Amino acid sequence: MATTYEFPSDLLAGQEELHQVRAELSALLKRLPWSVEPADGFSDDNGWRKVERPASPGWTADEQAEVEKLRRREHELAVFVSTHRFWADVAAEQRMEARSRLKHAHEEASQKKE
Image (cartoon, rainbow, N blue to C red; front, side):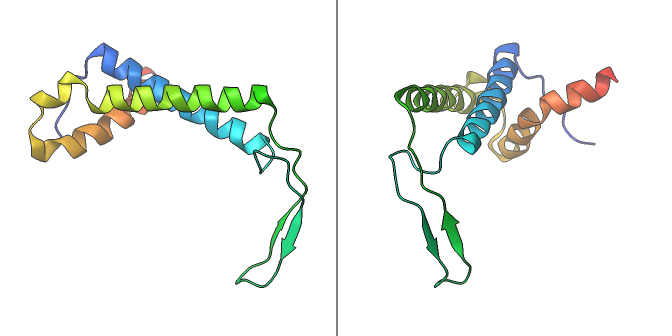
């Protein structure tokens, strides 16, 4: 049987917020223009596949600030989760499994509610 880990509430909350911030950042980057700076469009079919990009107006100052804010928060949360005091109590050979369990703890919690 797999080991059950009793993750502290602050670690679970940090991991959940990390998931949310990464999802928000990913969604933002998908809807922003492909280039941060204004750039002409291009088409290149000399490689192994054709690459095309439309002209990019670039990102606004607000968009750049939002991306930077989310990246900064993502970094803070990743450091918090990966250096949490909980990991010192987990045997080295079990940390990878425990980390994987933490990443999916929100899924397991929602399955138990159903």
